[in-house]
Picture 1 (cartoon, helix red, strand yellow):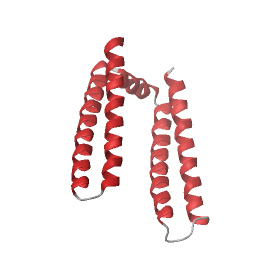
Picture 2 (cartoon, rainbow, N blue to C red; picture 1 turned 45 degrees about the vertical axis):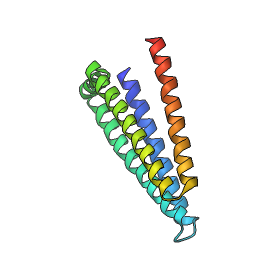
Picture 3 (cartoon, rainbow, N blue to C red; picture 1 turned 180 degrees about the vertical axis):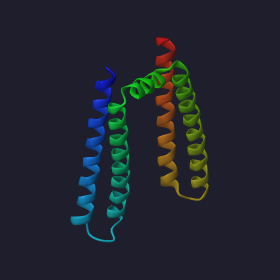
Length: 141
């Protein structure tokens, strides 16, 4: 099971790296110079390349050291780690909601009605999704 997960992780990292290289080549050879799109693609593909290469290195390391792979799998599934991950996600989500609400108010006071409305719609949709998940999990557990 652990070996299967590591091979899947290695395959995913290789795919991410290939997508990053493809995007980088596209930006270099086909996009016009000094274009916003080119800079955006450079940034995204650099992130994909870095993530893919680090993932490949880590997956190969874990494939060569099965005891470390087993230890990493146990730590990932440990109850304490899952609890910390859950609390972190919850706190981060609340902080982002407050930041969006503040940004909506500030941008609205600055006179940018359209941007303020977009942020308000995003804020409301996040609140609706959070409410739906909260209701679902409270009935499930």
